[in-house]
Length: 389
Image 1 (cartoon, one colour):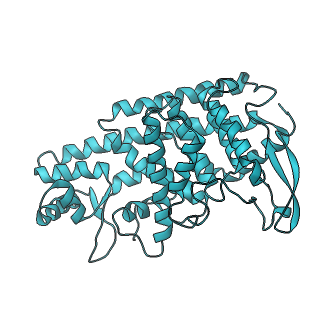
Image 2 (cartoon, one colour; image 1 turned 45 degrees about the vertical axis):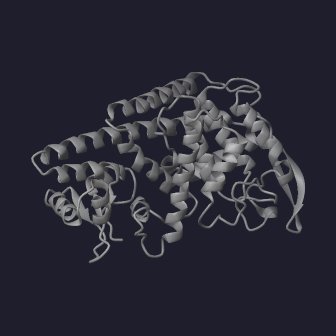
Image 3 (cartoon, one colour; image 1 turned 180 degrees about the vertical axis):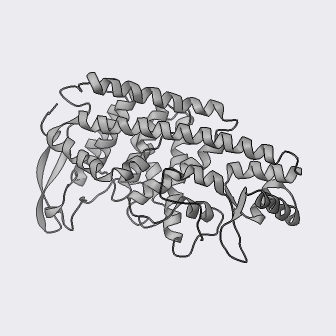
């Protein structure tokens, strides 16, 4: 359904030239969304797939086994969309203070994404509503280190920004002027709180994401925070008990179509085409994550049986790697509460059975990875756990 412009353009003058900025109408769309036929069936399929994904957490003896690395995988791909070069392996190594040379800033930036995500989820678990205050607080953590740390972390922008192009006059898109950001974000906050009408959670997440990206309220980090917002909404609405849906890989693989649809909504108001794209991503991502969780369960069970006759330290090291798939001798020693020689012997046993692999190729500061774990986690990506740091 074509509705025409979903906002209005207003003339601005910035950086010494004139341009047209776009101010979006408040949500929900008017006229109302046409959720019927194929789109209605797709919404039902997405809801079912999301329910099955959430149910997988009940199968896991410890949901943290899956979430620790899965959250970090999402952080990596969301940051890669913005141009960072850090991989999942780099991030896990960075967290062990063994960042690959030349990637310190990128790895630190991805680590900030993990911290921002966890902080937001912790606030939601405490019962705090998703609000502008929370969004700014999360943004402050997101940009606390890395390339965007000098771009007003935690504060809505006080200057004009633009997307695609060296100047606002030739940009692909120019968001609202800074003095109108609070008005636009205030309307978005009302929508998140079901004003003026209650909106189904998946639709709310899809619509709010586009509105946030259109407002572009910060000088930097809008894309990453806009993708985080999807997960925060689904958790706040009780659709997900654990944050197990992350769309960044889907959006990265379909980046051109994603950007096209964001602009198409503003011009034609075709929210239904965007919803088809978004819900398809929810279905594909949910099914892939469910498959990954089941494969990890099978892997853990298989390797536990292989090691069942080994010393307690070996079994506990295997359990440690299920939670932290990259480790060092020092980390293993601390986590297991054993001496360095005992930790080294346990690692050697896991290497013997092909469970742990040394990944640095160095004589010192060696790291060991649960390679099969990382292979499963990276099965749908271009990254391989066959890496040298």
